[in-house]
Length: 266
Image 1 (cartoon, rainbow, N blue to C red):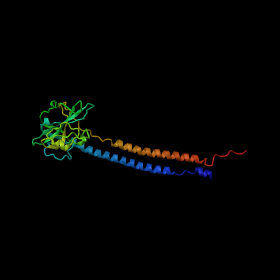
Image 2: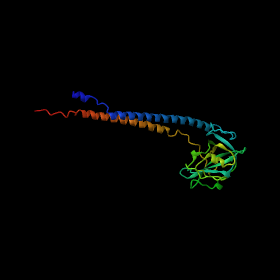
Image 3: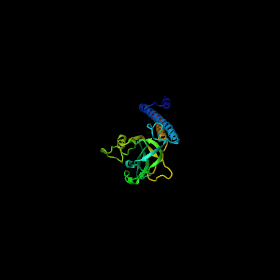
């Protein structure tokens, strides 16, 4: 009878049952997060393929009539017009290789009277906000080539707090917190629904330093997916190890339920 009891595998305890349910739920959640990150990675790949195709496409010949950026973001485009240097704006807090600086955006007025903001590139600035505009006057150019990018908005701000109240007729040059409506309102002409980032050209100006095209990558989704997968594996392996050790401990203890064997009588 005692030998049969000793050989019987101990049943799960209530804490072990509850723990198994919790671990199962955690593994399910981690698995869902793993699949979500994998889906995001494939979505990013699809979007990247579209961007790369647009980067390789011939430049859009003109800004005129382009009112919808669907299918044109990251397309090269030709801009013809005259720089309005007096109304250049600055996006502060744009460092380059550890050096503080700004991005300089100057509107180009086109033949019809409308304009498009041109991101001319990076300018060094000791305080990351102010630059000497007299040294940054752009010469007129018959044709410019750049990338179509979204109009500057809140996502490109370096401050979550709104800038100080703008007085009527005041031209704000430095935009810590970008408000698209206020930004457009300070120009006496209509701005395109996008801005153009100048591309580097041989023999072009050193300052402002033209920005390189955005890096096209898959982002951190694969690393996040592997992280969630590892969490699930750790839960499973760790809990199974605990259960095996717990059952082994109870099996060893059950051998001495009736006490150690008595020594033989002489």
